[in-house]
Image 1 (spheres, rainbow, N blue to C red):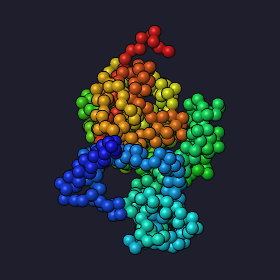
Image 2: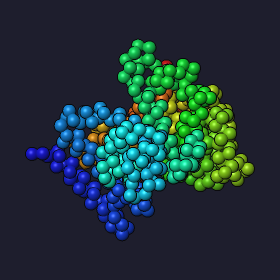
Image 3: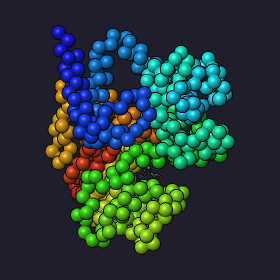
Image 4: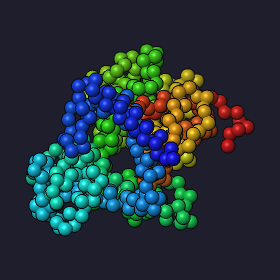
Length: 476
Ligand SMILES: C[S@@+](CC[C@H](N)C(=O)[O-])C[C@H]1O[C@@H](n2cnc3c(N)ncnc32)[C@H](O)[C@@H]1O
């Protein structure tokens, strides 16, 4: 009996029923992959629909892995590297914009190639491969139209506009085209080094951002990715990276930081120190939502200038009143804010290997008062297998139905490719909760609460810690 296959199929059927019920409630229908993006996409973002979609996706991928002949599954995985190559080729040659302008009747690959100024035979192979993976639709032999998936990275600019000013192609976009560019260019080249990196004696145990797989791939030995980006020849890549990162941030709801830790309960006049706060995205949300809190954003000088401009545009009153201040600070140096109510570390720890994270946490512990709270916002890695329960409030996840993996498998792949991406870029990583608890304990912090992201997947988890005294005998 094909019990496993049937169990997976029943999860898929139940999830479809749940999704359909929500669409019916809104008098709408689940959109076809062939339709352009539409208003009903908002229904797909509702937490209950997201939860059902996660189960469906997890079960569907597991069904394929179970049903396909093992060599076929492995070969499909092996040759997966052609997907980023083809995606980047299509993005860089503006195929989505060309097809948008062609409209619903589509365009023959020879005409697309003429506009894109590339070889039609080569382009045909690329588009056929993508359409086989449901990205673009081939409506007649060699005739293509955009579909819901290819439309995701539309810059919404005309081909003429892009050709006139290729340097500014990504400006004012949702950042997804720029993200495809960065990931399928820099990150992809670094990813190709992973196996050699972990086996070569000179890099195997390397934990610095200067000697990461990406730096090897780029043949750069003068610093980390940050200084590489600042080389004059990389101006376009630096711009593209900035827009890609803003795009990733904009996928999270602007008030994401407000989901979890109870900012409202902090006493009047509390000071939030947003350490490595970037342009102040979180501080601006907090300052906007709560009148009684003051935020200090700390970052590198170069970033603070952009941050002040950003805040000036979004919340100028907070700058004028001093509710938000921008301070230059290197988080490896002694922390000057010694009366912080909260130290906020959002998407900082994943950029650094353990040795550096310990230094960052220690600097904060040294400056903490007995009542200071530390809020860490970062992805938490969940094992595919069940884990022992935790006694930290909020830490335990509801286990998915059998036979799904405990971390929902490929439905949750983004946390794992983020983990590998941090390794490739910086020799760093995303961490499990157990790992974070260990690093925090080592530096005098005790985790008191975890807020897991909700099912919409838009919110990063939050780990809340308070200072404890480490007995001298256990200090390293
Ligand atoms: C991934 S970004 C996160 C920014 C912000 N916390 C957010 O979530 O939007 C990492 C930030 O760390 C900052 N950074 C890197 N090294 C730093 C250092 N030594 N001292 C202070 N900030 C640093 C970067 O400039 C960047 O703004």
